Amino acid sequence: MLFVPLPFIVSGLLGLLLLRTIRSREEAWREEGLFLLLVAAYAIQSVLVGLRWGYDMRGLVPIQAMLAVALPPLSWLAFQGLAGSAAAGRGVPPVAHAAGPLLAVLLLVVWPDPLDALIIALFIGYGAALLWQARQGTDGLGASRIEAALGSHRSLVATGVALVSSGAVDLAIGLDTAWSGGRHAAALVSGGNMLAILALGWAAWTAGESVVAPAAQAPGAASPADPPPARVPAEGIEDDADLAAIAKAVEALMAERHLYRDVDLNLDRLARRLGRPARAVSRAINRTTGLSVSQYVNNQRVAEACRLLAHTQEPVTRILFEAGFQTKSNFNREFQRVTGTTPSAWRRASASACAD
Image 1: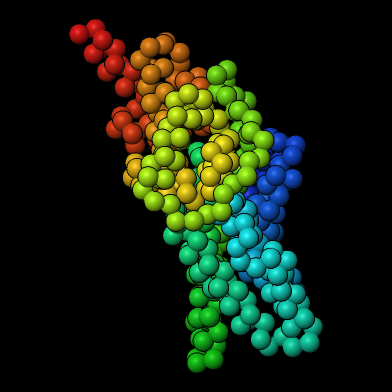
Image 2: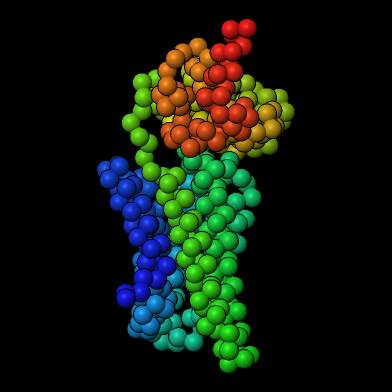
């Protein structure tokens, strides 16, 4: 019977995600190219791991190693893209992240011995950097759609953990080889590869889900165009009065322009409308409401959904689009978070209260 390693199953799922994303939006490669490339790289690496350890195809090891060194910098660049304006002008230029893979190619040709150490350093280093970035929460991903911000942040954490764990497993294998002649290497390789593939595959799937294009919007689910680019003042230390003014301006946008209905809304887009730095907008909302930007906007969407549930007979599936949500799962999760109940139960309770 043909043996089908688990990495092949993971690769197949990631391949389906790629096809779904590309078919749903013609400009997907242009707008989300880095994430799609990351998902494709994870899928290919899963196939290579399956062939190497499932069918003992050792000739694939150099190819697997070359792809491995590209995964950490590619993961970093993809999430830096989601960081949006918060990452602009920060850190090293994107082209500098090619240094690690180029050095790996050089070592493979002229001196392969340090290659394993380089791979371990790249995985642990980039993984730690991603976890450090994750400390900012969902507001640190200003270019991620509000509805997808939580999933994107979870994917960021999962990717960081997976990279660090993979590097740690490789380090343990190296130490085991040096100290005991590789007595536990097989178990470490088998368990480590499975955990890494599953973690990275889940991270890629979650990240890919966050960039899948919105479905056709229902009438009323507005997606207003951004205003002409305004000059954003340099970021500085805002006092309480300034933060309060920003929060009041955000509240006015939500109340007067119903900006929460924009399914593509993100922190950077909101900041551009206000002509203020994204970090200042995030700080203002955090300070005045105690919520992240995604929670604040989703609260507005849930409030609109409650109004529609109470005063109309429209089906829940239509209401969630009109309120600005894109998927039923996210709508139900946020509705439960805010109201403590389901949309259908809330509608029944509202109708009973009106009857009384």
